[in-house]
Image 1: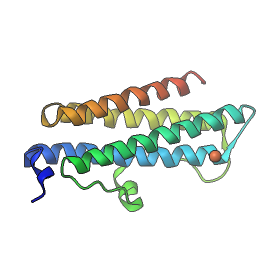
Image 2: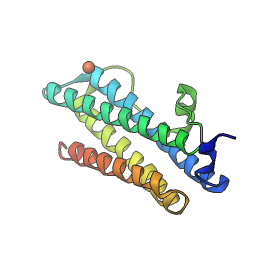
Image 3: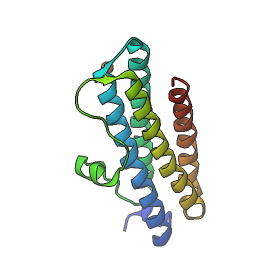
Length: 155
Ligand SMILES: [Fe+2]
């Protein structure tokens, strides 16, 4: 009924919406993981890694906002509720308690790699369905892959 429903046909809207939704769930999850590690980190390089994890959380939250708003723009309702994120996102998680910095780096590398797989699949899926959403996803993928490199370089 709304005018924005007309941007994509229903098949393309479904493909695009689902790709954006999976990406959204993983981005929200990554933002939560980065904050959990930011708070509970221990180790001799605490300060630099503490700050780096906050930058990652900021990137995840900013990107999640862009992805969710793109979903709405094409007529798909994004779902960022905690239960939905827990159900849909399969990123590795952290144990409760202190997180030694080497463990934090390894978990972030694995979580970023899982997110990269989601993003690259979403990029492929949206290629024909909605190249504008694909463009947004490509930009986010580049930023996430840069973060993956930054954490890998600390091994
Ligand atoms: Fe903080």
